[in-house]
Image 1 (cartoon, one colour):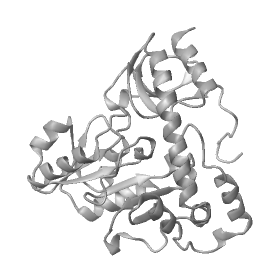
Image 2: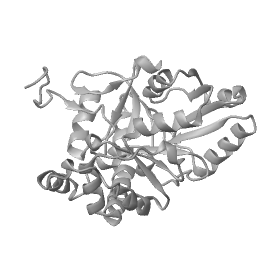
Image 3: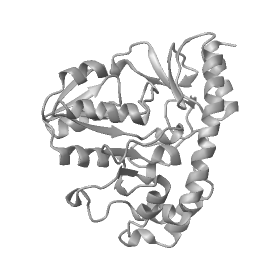
Image 4: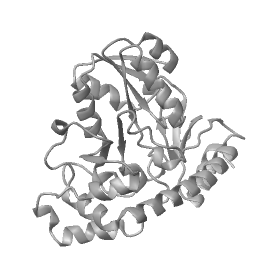
Amino acid sequence: MHGGTSWAEPAVLDFSDNLNPIGPPPGLPELVAEAAERGVYLRFPANLAEEVLAQYEGIEVVLFNGATEALTAMIAALRPKRLLLPWPTYSDYVRIAGLLGLEVVRGDLSSLVGRAASGDLLLLCNPNNPTGSVMGRDEVLELGRALEARGARLLVDESFLDFVREESAAPDVPVVKSYGKILAAPGLRLGAALGRVRPDVKSPWRVNSLADYAIYNIGAEALKRHREATREYVAAEGPRVQEALSRCVEVVKSRLHFFIVRGWTDKVKVRPLDDLGMPGYSRVSIKRREEDDLLIRALCGA
């Protein structure tokens, strides 16, 4: 053990993450292991995964080492004066804004649109983390037009769009996303910008060699099958768990694999939302059915 890090199994089940509840696509872990055995990390990546993900998305994909890097690069390239954040949302947006020296304005979406001015950038997490709320493509494009009329711009984070049956807003507005969520493999550090991206935003080696090899070799069709299987599972299991929990705790229902509850238990790990201005509320995520039944018992005491 180095640096005080322990790899021991957690004492309680962890429902605080928001990764794919059905796990990685079949064959992906084996391809990562194969990549390591073949020593691909000894060479620079070829960015071949972009070809596969472009087929998966139906649009040009520019990869980055994670969505955080993609967001930072895209916001820096747009050079806004202020970052408008519909609140509550993903807390790391605030850190990125601070890194880039941007003023942050938080509020509900309608008030932010009304306050938007020339040089502002509104960053929309759609579907939203942590609430799970979803806007349709047409609604997002209308939002972009409303902001443009005020001299402002829109950037959309679609990291959770793969979990629901909605269309991307790309290429009509700039879009970034994470693939670590749908792949249940955040350590591969796969994020992207969708659509055409300015050449100076693209670093020469945009993704690590292990991820590049694995995604290129698994192929777009396998990724599409995994997306479909994920959507089917979430559409069935999510409502089951939310309905069961709503009998004993307050539930803010969601179409996503995660949702918000008001209540607390030390029997399972959840993501408290106090730092987002929602004291007493937590985000919980579904997992496999047998694990979800443990969550229901933990929160409902049954």
